[in-house]
Image (cartoon, rainbow, N blue to C red; front, side):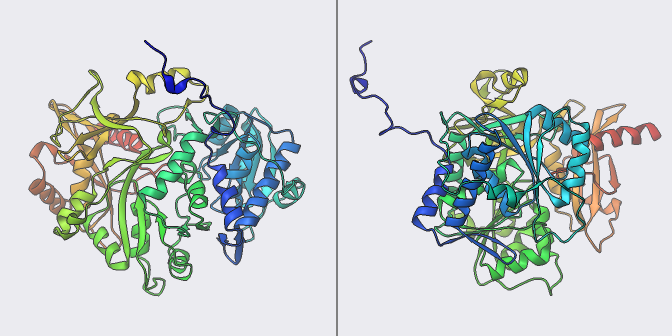
Length: 546
């Protein structure tokens, strides 16, 4: 085969090829809009010029502390300005940011610090005692830098080490920060929840972060100078890459230490927030807030959710309150959301029940994701587009992780066949939109029939008195297993189990109706996900008790 003539004497060089990195977004924002407000936190207003200078100071101070390319710097911080600075300053010195979930226990934090080989930890005063407990269990001994956020009004443990502002003061605001040597270089490591074993360290690269950050702006139609409220934890998939997105569109970050209704409503109205992300529980928090805490909005707020489909009534209430809700889907391994329920204008004229059905679908691929499909995992053939045949959702493209850190076996398994295997089961509708039906480990097989726990949960959520629903398999002597429903009642409601069972019988095939309903408090992981593994154990205990 002849050589491609367009490659002859046309080589890559510094003039025509630079590694892609989202760090360049902040540099540009600071140069073009230096005085624009980048960060709001309580009474603090910080410009892009200051944001950039502080991030460079952080990179400089880390470099002076011996941190370089490939080193891990951990952070255990809420949604405060220092966390945003870490998303830039840490990779600006070539290091890799490890954001720790603030809801974890000491043993899991210790595991992560050891596995990531952390050298420095930035920790908020609120979480210092927990971090100290974790360090007593850890093998590594990272330096601890205390972040004393003025918006924190709780107890402060004794600390005689270096504080964040003093550390930044040692850095150079004009530091010549490091571009990645290659855009494939790691920018962050984020750990999975580890509900079925040790957490896995998901490694993300500069290229993927650059692309998904821009993909967020395109997908969510974020205009220049949009205002984003931080209800989604930044430790969760690097805040779905929004810490970098906002610099690309010269937007404003509105920080929030805690997800509480009153400050959210105040920020929405007072700061003219245009976008926020959160689980359906955040929607419920807003809608159920006392009337004196709620504020009338003179603009529509874009709300992006990526958990279970919100009930029809909640969607209607959100619309009335001034929110436009869009469903996203992704995993830690895809930098956060890489699938969007792209809305068609003609769908808006459909009945609300039909709109809710359409909104419950996960959707189609983000622009920066090259491949998304549902496959039979055995044959690696796409399933029919019939909205019924289930397969495994798989991803391919530049916004898929590098792999699992120091875990080649898990990495190889995740990428079998040249696709990332999500472990989620779904179907494809005739219009090409995918819809999740279950996690592979959560599917219920009763008498040889597959039952989607998500399908049963959707019916339960449609019952007015149900606040939270989770369905798992319960062992059964005849059928092998049957659905068992765990229910949390909505505030001010009592649930009649017989009435709920009748509700399900009207809407589900008989074999899909839960054999048992349990009204209880439903356990969740530190990230708010329902702990189905715990519920499965509970269901087994219930069988043994009968």
